Image (cartoon, rainbow, N blue to C red; front, side, top):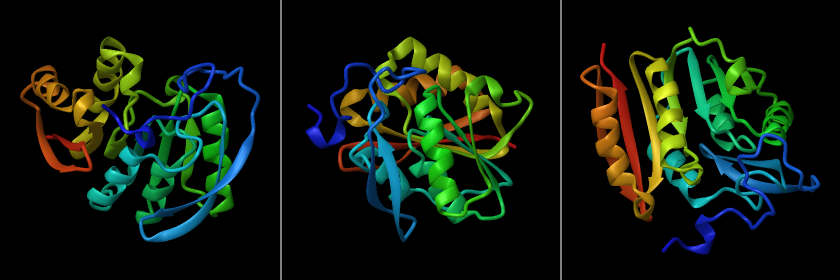
Length: 211
């Protein structure tokens, strides 16, 4: 069973609602991103409003610096992954994607507060489908359900550039191993899928698009 620390704060609706009806109540949290302590804004109606969730922490602690000029944070929430990418790769453009408009606004505001002008926060449909990404980092929204999750990953992982790599963090008890097996079959011969590490009950999966 997941620890209470691994779950988002209770809310009258899911954090993946496009337009949360929960009244916005912002708060400031202090988190450490790629070795830098920063103060950022979170809010009700988004994923993990109380601070950095354990899965995202595991992801950021276990992945190498992103490679490529175009980077993607899939399911950005209030922005910690996108901001960490921008801090680690200041010369790259970071695209933060989410369906939740409140999450996008928070990500934009947090990027501006840190002076990270290379971060853009967009709805999925506003990203040019022809764009290709050198690195994707994601704590994917497992709780949207298996079918929706599979559809999401099959939409975005093929947008890796040749030689590009995606890093996904998934809780072991929420199907990380079965997801790894499914990805290997669904993506086919042009991709290599492997478990990079296990940490604090989470798997970090590595998906590489072969050159």
